[in-house]
Length: 388
Length: 216
Image (cartoon, rainbow over all chains, first blue to last red):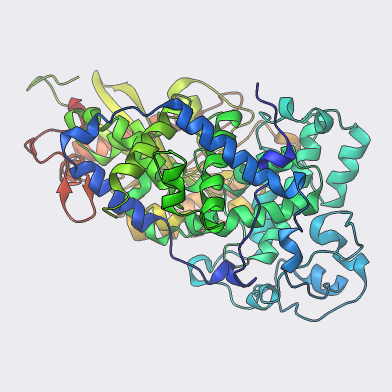
């Protein structure tokens, strides 16, 4: 078992983009996915048996990824979030108004309050190092006024309900990787659950109640922070590993925000129709296909690539380091294409309908080797990088 | 499975719909594999199971489709309804709100499928009698009003799960026999609905279109 630590998982957000970027950046992942699958489908037979790359390559890349993501914790780097503009806290009244079932627009909460007590519910009962609670970015609360057309019947009350349903049924795979949280007392767990109004957890062990309560606090805060996406089923799958290794809610929240900056585009479902057979892989980034540990391997390599790009490590430098594949922002896309490609022959020869392909893709769960997947994905990066 | 020319083959596509966490996936796993998962997670995307049922000495394949309950996923799932000849509309008897959503689910079903689809209203989790929020009469009442079959089930203790599917399958079979409903249309749809990634790269062009989906 590989040792897991918060440092390894923590994704450092170097970007200097404007803090309001959640809603303003690029389009969904699914359009490029379509073109990669197209190229995979139409590429010559030589690419169906790619030369397997040296596994050491990946290990090296992972080491550098771990190194990069660990910088924030290990080094003396200033918190990447310190640049983030902080805004005034919500008033208790404003916060409560978000929970009003009949309040369809989740009325504006851009007014300010100076009482730090009021933001406690935002991240559960959190402790901030400087007694200055983290707050939604400037533009986020204003967006509460306009629910996007894509989920017109969904509002904060809906999300709140679904978040709790999903938090209660989060899986228990994380427990062995987080001994301190595994041993949480029943009293602490119940208190925590009470603080986020979690119910119907009587059949759960204390550590899972505690985990569920943390999921609720952070997911709810995220839904306020990014009301365009709000909560979409699958997000709890993405958050669960993060809170398993990061014990403080506010740190976990901002890691999640960093994670979602890219992943949130996958939750825009209006472009998904053509790719619904790999849809689950897109939405939860292989979390359902791979084990907990394998998932973290894949995510870390993805994050390392993204961090390398943000840090300006360009192609040539990468070549000097004798690594075959240049870092890519879209490793997830290549990984999905790679696992479809692994089954290309089977699919072409035996399957006649979308249904059968979908079943094949769904059946990959539990049958993927993350190292082979990364090898193949990197081969595709090399092969296709210039074509796309 | 292809018995070239031998006997009729039936493939019925049945969709399971309803709010999040009403037990759609567990109804399906109970029916298809006689399994129940206490920690069943939210379904992401679309899944299906095929179960063979014998009816009047004929072998019928029920292809039962399952999807996420969250509203937002509807955008992904118009393909979900395509070719469906039966539907289970599920609520949780211990959560009134899931029952109140039924009308919305029916509206959605009506926009995607024609009215000949065999429909059944399913009140799931009937093992939770002590915390029941929707009475049997309320369920029956709505079903009569909307012209649906009605049954209460428990995926947990297996109550009525097979029966629910069998009633729907029987109804579809009767409709097909009376030529009200043409299940070939689904087969035809499947053979047209080949894998086309982007615009028209058809992976299965080399095969002729006559294969039915049952001939794998």
